[in-house]
Amino acid sequence: MPETPASVDLTPLTLPSELASTVAENAKAVDTGDTDARYALPLLGEAGLLDAGAPEDRDGRLIDMVRTVRELSRYDLSVGFTVWATRMTLEYLRASESLRAAELAPALAAGERPGVTGMASAFKDFAGCGEVDLTAERVDGGYRVSGKLNWASNLYDDAVVVSAATTGTPGDGDATATKILFVVEAGAEGMTFGRPFGLLGLNATASAWVSLDGVFVADDAVLTTDLHPFLARVRPTFALLQISECIGVAEAAVAAAAPRLTGLNATFREDWDRVRGTVADLVERQEEIVGRVAAGTVDAVALLELRLDAAEAAVAAAGVEVRVAGGAGYARTSPASRRFREAAFIPVQSPSESQLRWELARARAGALSA
Image (cartoon, rainbow, N blue to C red; front, side):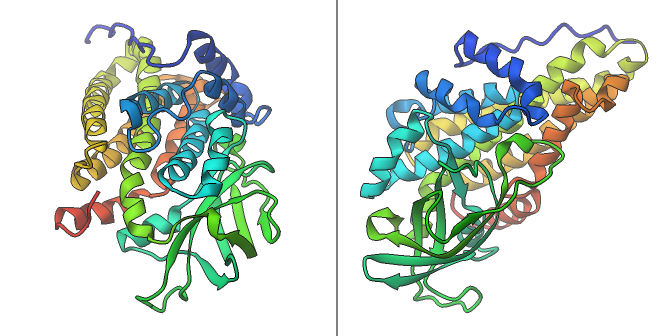
């Protein structure tokens, strides 16, 4: 039998040690729903880590944001996911010239308010595999937006919501329709948050549906009326931070599995070696792509391949960990069980694995930009 591998060193990345310890110590309480994952937002805001690189690698600090979400996700994917959603909301606000966006951005950067990125249908529309869910009727001074978002997270009563809407009728293929990106605050008249979903994991992320019935969006709250070029600008950051979630979970699972590869569990050594090597490769590929964001030279195929490979690695790593953990892997509140459930979420996080596969095939055919 091969020797037991040396322990895996999860080198600290960007988090102050006290903050990292806090996230690690609270992971169980977050997993059981006793603590909302948003608790970490003001801590990160105080450390100046929520707005690093926003927008489009400003000041060359996107690498810090990528590493922050990766490190958080090692300890608790619920926190990593909550930070991703807030940071992307901030990305949209900072990438816009909207006056209302400029007013709202500081509270998100400080972690005082959570961000909701209701963008699943917008990115499907951008990719060509779906349409924008919400409709917008032009009225004096702005738009009236109606429709339903089937899934959004960070749905707290002080949240800042960004989503897209079309002046056309979904399904009619109206090429003259205007597609807008807008920001609205929780509590706006006509907007309703559903009851939180009961999920296998990430139940502390305040995830539910959102209904909009004639919600007024003033002109100064419209982030853009040219949706697709705007999404092309923010998409690399969107994907890179999701990749950080995947890598963080995978790294933690690989590290936790290492000391258990003894006795009969040594039969999993080859699987462990393979996923460990994959994770190291993913980190190199991710950081190389980060360096291309500011210049706008991110390759769509490379980005989509990395996103899919990272998701696969997270699932594979969590699978190895739960197998070598024995009975503890089946215990509801064990770290191995939590990571296994976290990893199960990754293939369905929008864009889902099926959408990513579809987009990758199209990108390889040269039909889609990053």
